Image 1 (cartoon, helix red, strand yellow):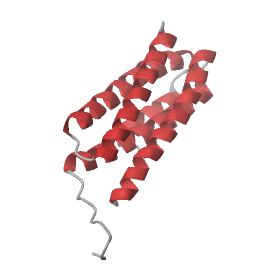
Image 2 (cartoon, rainbow, N blue to C red; image 1 turned 180 degrees about the vertical axis):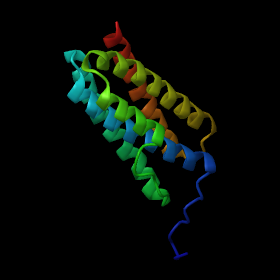
Image 3 (cartoon, one colour; image 1 turned 120 degrees about the vertical axis):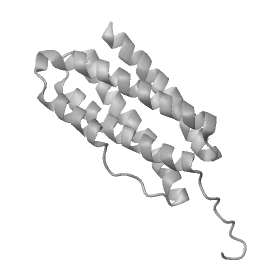
Length: 151
């Protein structure tokens, strides 16, 4: 260690696991929302999908900043299950797309919220907790918007 340079605290397993899992969730949401933007037939869903792309890019950038700070290697693609949903989005008949998109996005955001709530309860790193709080605000907004277009 260099004199005058503070040592980085080792991140907890919880913090590392959260960063990796939420990175994959954001990568999946970005790609799923891009497909949603192209395939949605309802203009409100198309508009929402565009907003989801932008929001998840920003959230993933905040997560990536923490990963770089802690020198944690992050996944570069969604999980196989998340990739399967992307393929399903690409192949479902157009008349079924909007409903599939909204229902699966609600489920995905619920899963991301559950993961983030766990981080807020069990995480150690204050900066990662700040990112998790930012995520909660976005997730709530996304869930509300998805519920509105589902009506």
